[in-house]
Length: 230
Length: 230
Image 1 (cartoon, rainbow over the protein chains, first blue to last red):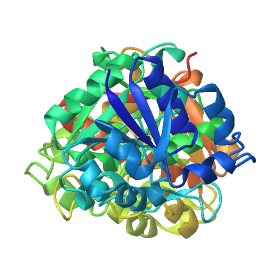
Image 2 (spheres, rainbow over the protein chains, first blue to last red):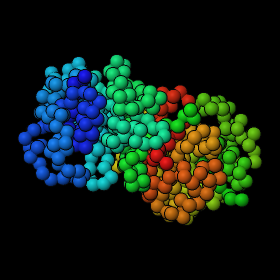
Image 3 (cartoon, chains in turn green, blue):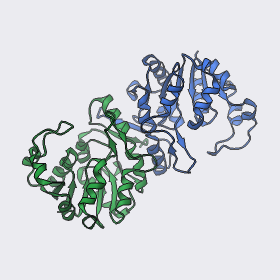
Image 4 (cartoon, helix red, strand yellow):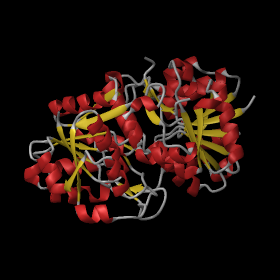
């Protein structure tokens, strides 16, 4: 049984937490303020029901502050909105993150000009790199950020072959993350190690295409497959 | 028999020209200066042999200036390096491009800081849009820019399903381009109309991922497939 932390109470955090708990891990979700998170009664900006509705059905998952969750977790998933990720990680506390694997699922989406969002960092930098640079003693592995949350944790929900990518500087950390991906159902052949954390530029820059495809297909249950003829 | 122009003498221009000629079209390649293009005897920056070697084997293709080719073509392919595309199109002449379909295959790659290249425009703008804005009377259709040249013109070279994307403001122009893609062997189900020319942001921003994948796979004969479970 591995102790895992999820930072972020949105649909990505909920989906990862539920699946990781189901797979026999011990999971704590971190949020800014536990009381106010549980006090919310309205749907969020994306139309999802309030966190407490989900939490009533998933009360085997623990809930704490960002710092409590980070301290609890042997590995930590960053499932916060990209524009607050660095601030959340600071509030989680460097001492609670140090030497641990941080699985960064976030994307640098900026909706301030409406839809479609643009990226607040891209091209010659990435959010994955910004997080790695801000926390040099943390082993950042960027992954899962190129698809819908339900496919992240259960790739077999989509028939046929499709890929998940990994970017990170630490080979051992990527091997550990690969084991988690395997536990979700990802086959080795569909897990693509892109290289160091700078390759997060590539995967984060797929988001504008993902968002347009979502508009074209009118359904989020799709994913990128890299066809190599094999 | 359709008269088609190809702007650019690189590997993309050569590959498209040869294939379009083979399919029964009449093709003229446009270059800045015909004499100096034919006078080059050294491999280009990417290690490809000089244009004249290719041209000796493909002399049914005509060769002219950018303006001659643009005037000749009923449709025009932009296969120039992205950083000179606007300048080349200006030299091709607005009157020679006006009311025609411009199939934009270029990408805004900047190699000035070495490898991997970055994009000199992205995120809130795209090269496709810059071209459309500079030539409002031209019907720009961005397509084919997300893959290797050999796959562009013969998708069956890669087993299994993979996609080509189209972005453009003019539905009729996209229908004409679709016919050309069909003639290359692209099946309707693998041609994805992404919407207006602003969706070129999405496909151009896939290039950093393409380049990293090329590094990871060590082979350019791969392509993106959008797995929708169908």
